[in-house]
Structures are given as C-alpha cells and as structure tokens.
Length: 493
Image 1 (cartoon, helix red, strand yellow):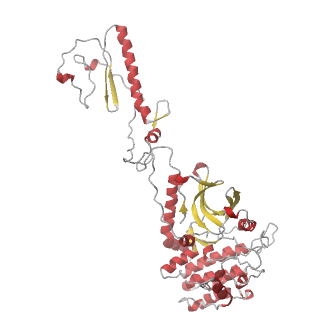
Image 2: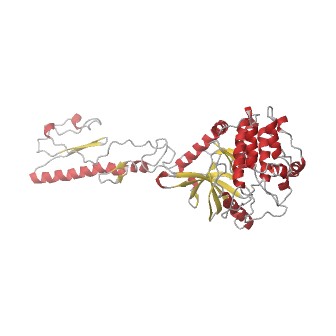
Image 3: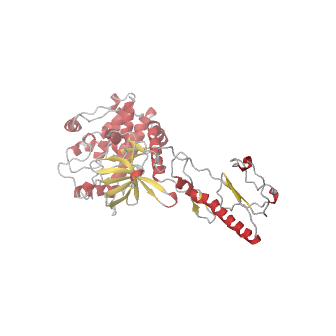
C-alpha cells in the first residue's frame, strides 16, 4: 500500500502532477502515486518514477533512465505497462506510467506460500501467457525506419510482472533493457538484472544477448509459479551464480503433483542452457504452453484471474482506495455549504457559507443578528417624527423574544394607569409584547420586521471545550511497514 503524504504539510507537485504518496524507493529512483486533475472534476491517477536528485549529474544514470522511457513508450500492448510521459523538472527527471491497481506476481507467490499453498495451475498459466505476450511485443519493437530494435528486457522476474485487479498481467520496468539503439552501453563485466533470474549467457557477461535470454528468465518465473519455491536462489550471490551456470533443473513433473509430463517438458525446454535448444521466441514458448495445457491444467480466463486477485488482495485494494479517498477529502475540503457536523470548523466559516443577505451578498452570523437592531433604530426615528408632528407625546414599547422582534406604534396620550408592584415587575420570558393598559390591542398597528430578519438557521454545534474551533483532529498515522514488506507489495518495484 502506498505511504500517503500528509495533506496538512502542504501539497507536493511535479509540473502538472500532484504527488499523493510513495509507492517504492530504490537505488536509482522513487515511484510515487500521483494525480492529474483538470476541468469539470477530471482526475486520473498515475505512477510517477522520479530519478533521485543526487543522480541528476550522473550521466550514465540519466541516460539509462531516459532510455527506459524512450524505449518503453514505443511499446503499445495490453500486457505491457505503458509509459505516458517523460519530463524534467527542478526536482529531477521523471517518467509517468499508467497506474495499474493490483500487485506483483512476487506478492501473489508470497501470499500463497504464507498459506502453505501453490498458485492454482490455471491461474499460473494465465499469468505466464500474459507475461510472454508482453515480452514478445517488446522483442518485436521496431524503430521509425522499420528496423528491429532487438530489445532484450534482461530483468524478467516476479517483481516485474504486475497482476491487475482487471485480470490482466503486464510486464514492466525496462530500466535495464538492452537494445541496438540504446544511448548507453553496458560496461564490460557489469551485470544488470537479478542473478537468480539470469540466463547463463547473461550471467557470464556475454555481449551478444538476444530475446532467448528473456525466454530463459521467463522459464524460471513459470517454474517457480508452479513449484512454489525458488529455482536458483542461494544464500549469497556467488552461490546463486554457480547454480545458474551449472545446477541441474529438476523436472516439474516430479515436484508438482498431477502436473503432466507434456507441460513439464515445455518449461524444461525454455530452461535449456544452450540458447539454440530453447524456444526461439516468447511467442513460440506461449504457443507450446497452450498446446500442452489440457484437462485440469486448463488456462484460466481473465475473469477468473481477476476473481483470484480479488480473493487474495481484495482487502488491501479496498483499504488503499479508502485511504486515497480520505486523503482527497482532507486535501480538498468543500468550499460551499456547511461541513458535516462531525467535522469541527470555525463559527465564521459555518455562517458565511450558509447565509445570504437581501442584496445577495454572503453574510456572517454577526451580520444577520445586526439586521433587526438596524430595523428598530429606523422605527424609533419614524415614531419620534410622528410625535413631533401631532405635538403630543407618545410611547414606544419594544421587546425581544428569542429571534423575533415586535414594535408597538405611537397612540394618543392616555391617562397614566394605576400600577401595582405586580404590574411593574418584568414580564416573563414567555410573554408577548403588550400595549399599555386602556388601549385596544386590535387598534395598535404592528410594524413587521424587514425581510432581512435572520432566517431559520440551526448553527453548527461548537467544538468541545479545550479544542480550538479551527483545529482539525489529528490524523491517525498509518502503521509503519517494514521496507521489505513495502517493496514486496509494490507493483513498480
């Protein structure tokens, strides 16, 4: 799962992309979950691979990074993670990949091992065929003039096979791929890739690698899918290299119960140490697998693969979606209408977002409360003017009751009534405004408050004592995972 950034610490952007969280970090680059937004609420999530800033001046690393973008962007195939964009920013070079919701084959294998199980054979074969189809598309890549590029991935491994919740497996990470038109060249004696998944000629440092090196590596991946254990991996790199070069490969038919000899022989042919005895291409390898898969070794459909991924990783996928949704809600609070009652907010913002005055302008709660006071001042001035014209006296009686206000108009002078202590006592809070004794209530005109009187409005409850109104509740920090766990689960590692 991505380690999401704290929105309260300020948004992080790279050109037109907003960084949401970190997916993985390696020796050469860091991969982020990023978001692209646009008009009308448009948004799209992508995976951004950004070269470490301290490598920006290292020519070899920069050229290798740009090679990956330049070569992989040419491959258009449903079983290859596409490159959407490459750019340079003040924080370094970056490339943008399509974000595939899912996880790596390595993670699926680890989950099966935790439960003491193997991948179901139909599921393993479906992933294998998708991987081989993506590799063949890369091998067939041509330049603008139509000449073959002779691309070799050189890093085929379970970590670089992404299995999506859509039931499609894709090959990714062409960072160490080799092609005839590459900008960079491998130094003599320098190994690139994972030793445990190298073809013998690649491990020996031979320069004349071709697509058959990827056939061998794919054979290792498929062997491990079905056997549920590592083929060449040893306690150190030297021992691993020795096993790659000379260790006999056990036939799968003696390791996997019920696996047919025909299917085992197909995989054994891909693992021939002599390149001339292997399949000439990944397409031939895939065709042979399909022909050998019969009976219970049938090949799962994409829908069945999607169901399996949902069964194994469904809870994590849902948790990631909810975490991103919460991140968006925290980074982009609504600017119109009151916030939910469970979210503390300032008293000014709650009123200012909800009430409008007679001129159509937004009013705060204090503005609304001031309107009745202004209306009473106007009535007082009017009554004084009327009393001056008739040359008599008058009286004014005004009284507030909750949010309503009423005013009695002036009447001719009347004899002063006899008062008693009870009559002179203050009226009860529930009483209404009454005219003086001796005056017919029906003859007293009542001044209606102006239309600006505060409308029915229920203010939001104030925050609990001891918490400032503007303070957001502290976000619960996600449980920190170990680097090994993050790397294992990340699809772009």
